[in-house]
Amino acid sequence: MIARRLLLTASLLALAGCSLEDHPKGDLAVPDRLTRQPHGFYLQDEARDGDLFKAWAASENNPDRSVVSHVKAVQRVVEGDAVYAYIHTDLNPKKDDPDTQAQAIGEAYTQWPQRATDAVRIGVFDAQGKRMGRAMMVEPQRS
Image (cartoon, rainbow, N blue to C red; front, side, top):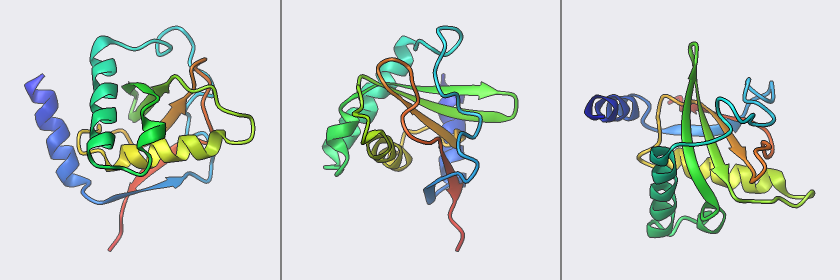
């Protein structure tokens, strides 16, 4: 656990200053829907991370805090060389607005100091496990 936190801290320092953008290829290999196994459920630690994310958004008066309040868990998933952040919510998005909510949650996630900085591909999922909007990608800012 300590090694994980040290790795996350080092990654945060390495990627200081990131921006969120929709990836031109769309899904970035982030699934359209989470299947029950292996990623359709989340662990207690991932639910705790979701609570920490919500608490941070509320304490920072983040403009997206109302939509972030729907986050249930933040899951870090490693598949080969790719690292993903799956953000589980209790949202049941309206047909005309899933992208806005997903984008707001993704933007807030990139600002969260405790995020998994090695997870550069982000997917936001509704209460049924369906990806909301497009997958997003965090890239280092160029000076």
